Image (cartoon, rainbow, N blue to C red; front, side, top):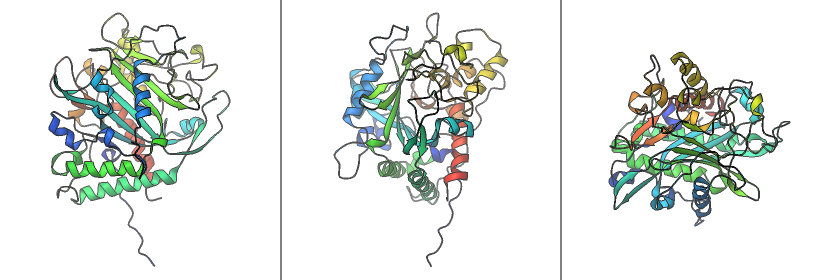
Length: 424
């Protein structure tokens, strides 16, 4: 009989939320993964992020609204010409997630479960004006699903996701193997532990960085394909601010389109955050994270969930208003809790300001558990959730950033993978 394979040790947060160190010079790019270098299926000349999908990504980001939609007051993302080239984009982070939009039983019952690998990508250029990490980020979301279950009543056209757990378990096994090889000194002849609080991944700094980067790239190319890329998102600026958020979905016939915000009015796709002017969050969201979980929302559903039926909180309540500090804590605790808040009931600005804004207000006893202090957002204009923030206000190198919500999502992911998928 063949010997039984030893069971893998439980994964740690840094194993499933992999943050690359922000580059400080052109020399640092060698230890990053260029999006243009990620190959598609074996034997195919196609890249993992195809030219056609990249073109739609840029077009949707710069012009997200349908021509018939009235102006909301949100400005449009403005990309410099050098950012409109795919070779400017690099992988800043990788999130391995067994179940979007959330892993609680209540969310799974309404939406199903979509395992995915999310690549957080950011543009970095080195031109006549010097080396620059741009204040822009994209999400490329590759899903692992089977034919979906029919949508629940009132929730069409969104079906319930059915996970392809066999394919995703192969990802989990390879992640565990990489962790073990890193700990055994296979990369750069140095033994590296991934335990501890979330931080820049310890294997991506020092002697192990280049070899471990190569191993991660190979893992991505082994398990991902252009056909798995069904969802994208972008956050960019109209320099030097505001910040604008747009989500995108691949739909039959139309391809990749900008999606109306699930917590907006059913029409507008873009949401904006600005520190200048009377209103800082435009359009104002109407969230639904204090009602029982429902698959009804305002994105592509006809009719959308009426605003009068929604009950929820958003950071705009204290960004655009005056509330007690205790109320700020209540709001951010709800938004940072992935069992209560998710993409379909909470707006983009809230999920990207729930840590930086309370820290900037110096709210007593506010902390970011599970995250190393070195990567807490240090500036209230840092809207990164998991990535690199270049401060136009203070200058200096880009700052690695991880938020309270990113840590909470990671904790749920680690618990689910270790109990439900690893060694199964």
